[in-house]
Structures are given as structure tokens and as C-alpha cells.
Image 1 (spheres, rainbow, N blue to C red):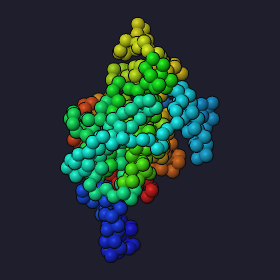
Image 2 (spheres, rainbow, N blue to C red; image 1 turned 180 degrees about the vertical axis):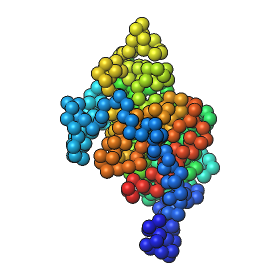
Image 3 (cartoon, one colour; image 1 turned 60 degrees about the vertical axis):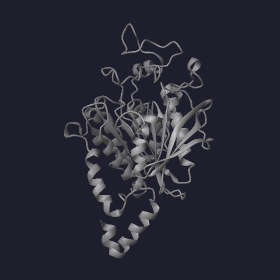
Length: 388
């Protein structure tokens, strides 16, 4: 590496010592300068689409065009366009209440596991909606705002800390690697203020809840608030995607096989359901694919009719990096949508910000999980967001 050649071996040793001090949360030192290049070589292939999909933009409308057809010509134009997308979607889905940047956190229980402490905590995921989760603090994390963190979202918080399920213990595994993690859950979506009169489409309400959970992490003295990511699988993948796209304080994100664009040929890519984007009141449509007898409802009906798709939200991530950990629902063809965010990043002068891995089945496995963990280690532990 150039920095090593420039400073020589003595400076290299100083750099290693400094990094060990700054990143005190890890059980070993994968974030050292010596491992930086090796780690990038591991994950670099994920940022390249297969030859079949390179430059293929599919049927999706370019985010680099305003809704009135004008082209985005400058970075300042992009900021205006970005706000147009964000405002349009928030208006359609329902405006959020103010994010609580100083949430009250009640600590209910503490236990020590492996090389971290696990705290059972309670906070309001939304006003009037108390929620219990698990906050994991590595033993070596110091109270000097130096440790990266990851929010883990799923149906329940137990899965993320390894008390339920298989290969979904993201919070547990990342805590062992030195991240502060927070595992939260919410069964069957979030209705705000309540199921009978929800004012926000439930998937956006979940994203709002994740924004509040972000500040549980950000307010910990161990955590660097500029290095907080988010990850989720399936239902949690949808949740993590909407949260990271709509709340730009998340530094990066990994979305595991949630279905990153609308697809009515895949029953599990079910954004039409009332607990996602199809809410139209407390009397839910019959569960299942939209048909003539069981039509689309709520905002989802409008989105399909008017030609919106989720690649617009992906573009809001730029230049923040994200990874799609694809399985049966997010196959390589999704690069046709992802290429639009690649184009936005290229327009802004960034590369290697959009990644995708693929496996055959929906369920995550040790290999796909390792790919996500390496993604977070590179972008958060090594603070590559500042370096690039």
C-alpha cells in the first residue's frame, strides 16, 4: 500500500498501534492497515455485476431524471432530485412524526456472553409503542465514541442474538467481531398510531422505528454515531432497506433477500400486503398475490398504476454503500435495478458503493453471512467512508 511505502516500517508500526487503540472493540485486529487490502480483495467481486447485466438498466425509470422529465445535470441538481424523491415517497406513504434523537432507554437485565455484555432494554420504537430489544456491548469497547455499530431488525429480537432460528444471529456474530449491536423486532409490522387508523404505511412506520432505534445506539458512549449500519433478512431485509434509504444517518446497509423491487411473480416479494404498502384500513384484503378477485389495495395500488418502483429509494443511498445478500427472491437479474444506483454514484464521482451476492435459497447460510460481515468490517470498522 502507498501509505506503507511512504512512511516506512516504523510509521507502519505506529499506525497499527493506533488502529488497535481506536478500534478497541474487536477480538482481533482485522481492521489493521495490513489487512485492509486483503479484505477489499475478498469483497471487491460483489461490487461487479455479471457480464450479462453490466450496464443493463431494464425497464426502470432513471432516478437521474426529475419527475417532469428534466435531466439531473449537476451534483446540486441531484440534491434537489433526491429531495424530490424523498418528499414524494414520504407524502405518499405518510409523513413521519419527529425522530426521537434522545430516546429514553430502560435497562431491564444484563448478562455476559462470550466476549460481550448483553442488555435487555426497552424503548419507544414509535410514540406509544414500547419495544424490547437486546443491546450487545463488546468487552473491549471503550467509552470514547470509537466503536462501529449495527442495528439488526427482524420479527423478534431473540433471533438476532442467536436465541432462535439458524444463521440469522447477525447481532450476536457481529458483537463477537467487535461491533456494538442492537437487535430489535416487531411482529407483523408497525401500525402508527394504531391498526385501526394507521397514518403511515406500515413499512415506512417500521423505517421510522429503526430511525428511533438508531439513536439508542448513537447515544451510547462506546459508539461512533457516524459509523452505524443496519441489516435484516426477509421481512427484516425489507425493513432494513426502507430504513436505510429513508434515514440517511445510517452509514451503510445490508439487505438479505427481502425483494428489492416490485415483482408480482414472486409471492414472497409481497409489498402489496397491508402490513407493508397495501394498508387501506383495518379490514385487510385476503392474503396472497393480487388478482382480479383479490385486487391491489392502499398505496401499493397507486404505486403500480403510476409506475413507481423501489429503485428510486435505492438511489437515496448514494453515495452510502449497501449490499444485497440475494437468495431466491433477489436473483442476479436485480442488477438491472441496482445499476441505476451505480449510475447515480458514478455521476457523483463514486464507485464500488453497490454490492450484491447470490445464493440459491432464501435462507441465509454461513457463506452469505460471512460476506455481509466482511462488508460491515470494511465499511464501518475500517472507516472507509471517510477514506473514500
